[in-house]
Length: 116
Image (cartoon, rainbow, N blue to C red; front, side, top):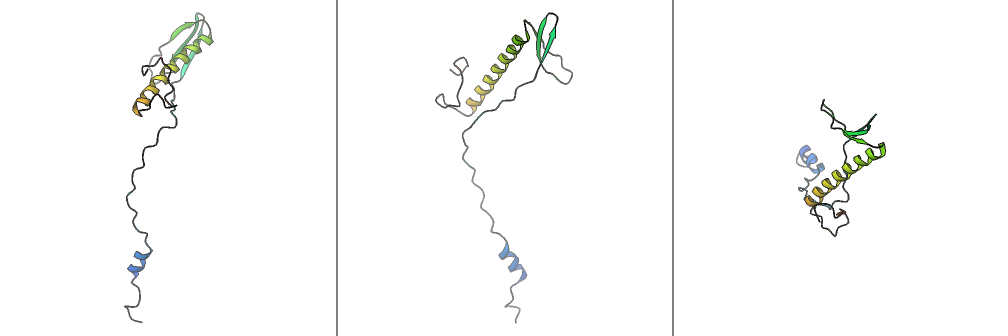
């Protein structure tokens, strides 16, 4: 057998190598299926004068306490109102960014927000 009839070792390596893949085309942007918002933690405190609430702080910052509330239930409602406002503000920014129309089910804001 001559050297010409034997496949070259480099040829064998190159034949076994996968062909380079073409660059991937960017996928079209899919519409948002949902929006998720993580909210701040809150601290509640019961004092002789009533219930107070404050956003939980770190790094040695000072808490901004609000109250007194008549009961812990009304203090929790105050937290819920702040959460609802925060969610509505974030959602407003999200739907403006994603250009979601009022007819889309994800629009979902009450007429009290600034987008009406």
